[in-house]
Length: 127
Image (cartoon, rainbow, N blue to C red; front, side, top):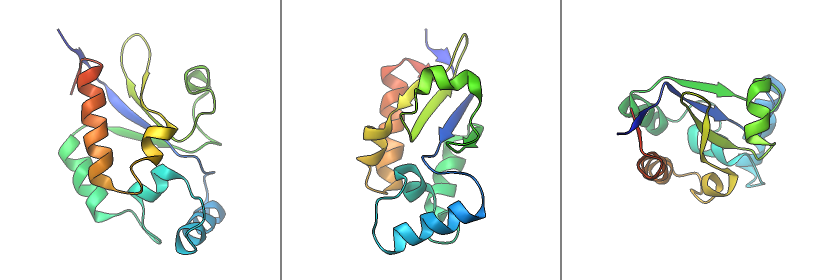
């Protein structure tokens, strides 16, 4: 029997706030190393429509955090390996995609969606 997911947790490898958002946009514009998860979910100025469609299709609540504001109870699990995506399950969250897996998506929403669904299946999780 599969285990149900309460929600997904996305943790960006970027700080929260306007200054960080501007910095991340500049990194994308000049093709410098930016947060792999930011590159997938956001364009230069706003959230990508392709990501919004994927998020809607997943039909799961998603909590978004940054490296300077994610909850302390996740630090033991994440161990500063950012970005990452976790599934909130009982008794504790599990990592679905690590930094290498997210970065290998190369900014592509479809690649992330495929990897996410594969990880859900591999971990016997339902939503």
